[in-house]
Amino acid sequence: MTEFRMPSLGADMEEGVLQEWLVAPGDRVRKGDVVAVVETEKAAIEVECFESGTLGRLLVPPGTRVPVGAPLAVIEPEDAGAAAAGPPGEPARTAAAQAPARRQSPKQEREAAREPGPGRGAAHGEPRETPAEHPAATRAAPAQPSPAPAATPGLGDAATAGEVPEPARRPAGEKSRRPPAEHPAHSPEPPQKAAQEPEPIPRPVHGEPAAEQPVAAEGPPVPGAGPLVRHLAVSRGVDLAALHGTGRGGRVTRADVEHARPPLAPRVRATPYARRLARELGVDLTGVAGSGDGGAVRAADVHAAVRARPPDRLERPAPRPPTEQPPDGGPRVATGQRTDAERRTDAMRRSIAELMSRSKREIPHYYLSTTVDLAAAVDWLRRINRGRTPADRLVPAALLLKAAATAARQVPELNGHWRDGGFVPASGVHLGVAVSLRQGGLLAPVIHDADSLSPEALMERLRDLVQRARRGRLRGSETTGATLTVTNLGDQGVESVYGVIHPPQVALVGFGAVVERPWAAGGMLGVRPVVTATLAADHRATDGAVGARYLTAVDRLLQRPEEW
Image (cartoon, rainbow, N blue to C red; front, top):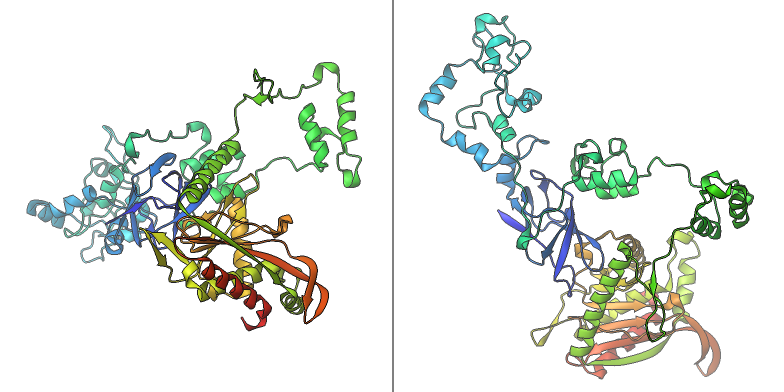
């Protein structure tokens, strides 16, 4: 039995909020399976399991803030989990449910041997039915006998009293519907016992209160859907019964609900300004006739709808948050409630500020830069992209990443971490790529073993990571383990960038925009595409000479991309 603990999803992470469990007790998990979603100060990250086995107990309920290293769940070994889990779809049997099988007395064994088996008819020698043949009857056993239970159809009054009818009172060959009694070597009534045993209630850590359970207004429970998933479905108007679950065993996950389209009215075609104006004036666009192309609603249509309404039906726009005027005549500051997105952005900015301040305070930076001629690289890109579709074409960013990773393998002094007062070289080149988020802030997902990937594979990995980082769907293994970070602001028009090292790394590489500049080559002056490459390095681990070797290697690699 092992404990699944809160992983560290970044060098600056101290705690995280367990947002959602994607598995349930009794589920079999393998190493690398996504089992939970954890929200850090930067993003919500899917966390993978580090062991294979059967999930025993959930120790922490969703919504609990947990420090790094705290146990979240118990994972039982494969053999123990298989014995306790039973048939697929049944909850795992607890130790209390299995204990009576080991403590059965000889008298109970003799009485059980004299009783006719559940699959035995009146005629002796008829084959006995196994429990697997009637799983529905096994699970239908009541948790507690009521004072006056109703008679089970087909079994008569004897079945009502919990007794097995005599063979003479049943037609020959008819099989009993009573849940089978297993061999003494097994639990005598494990299905009934398992039904009586309640699932362990997760306990919050560090004395924090458990998350509140959704109320009954969230609709009837759907098999395989957790409380948070049902709550999200109700808030978005999604019918869980109509969803096809993509989780383990058809379980409906949060991603299924988020990607589902609720049965709402069709989206009204309107210009962005018309939508903003409608929000400000309180106009419902579904009742506005559009005069634009294809019936799109324009701003003039919104104004016409406002003028056409009676004065008593005019809706006033939502009031703006109250503002306060500082005594010194400074800018007015809004005092209204902040949205969840703004709070998450503020938390991310605080986390980035603390990490970067620590980096500048503890790491003695030195900076180098060079201008690289990309004429050969651009010509090579033009040749290989000639026969490709626009979606499959390579861009210069893929070549820059490939050159940065390969140069790090050739100059290993910059590829690693500073730990315990010394440099620890890394066994592979794992590039962290800085990605700006639409709501503000940035993440640095990791491309593992980037030096061994082709430019095409790097391009595909980069595109996938950027999309999932901006949607908040990164996995835990994709946010940790970077040995060198690359930042590229070329798409923003910046010609050079001097970054701050991400501890415990010892270097950061920056690339600017590819621009055309006058360039002398072979005694001739011409116009060529060039890019500025920069390096920020830790002076404790290396000196300027090592950094110069690295930038020279990057330049040399970009002159011969066909040799990669």
